[in-house]
Length: 118
Image (cartoon, rainbow, N blue to C red; front, side, top):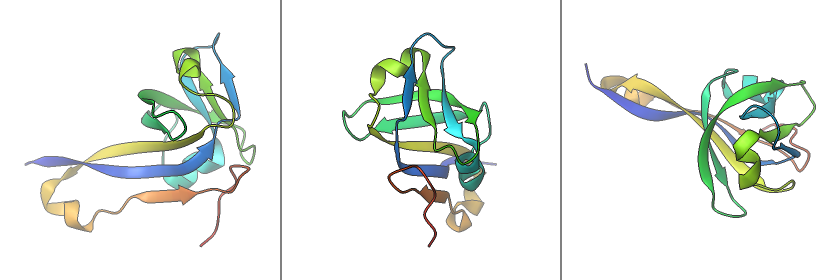
């Protein structure tokens, strides 16, 4: 069986709320946003910094629900500043024959990292 890598979940234009250099590397994300985008704690995530073009990989950890927290920790803290806008993406391996029907969960947020309703 052949598999294809597909976008599974995405947080679109979230704002960095903190950077913690002296912390084990990761990205703390409001757990409510994790659930909406179906990104699991400790799952690999790709981060794209809209402000400076940096692209990097780390893993997600939970921050309190409703907090709007997006905190880059460890080495990732050097790749963004508080207030930068990010796209956070997670991917899944999908059987190629299922790819046409596969749809990612994309979560859009307001200026406070609170989910927007459609």
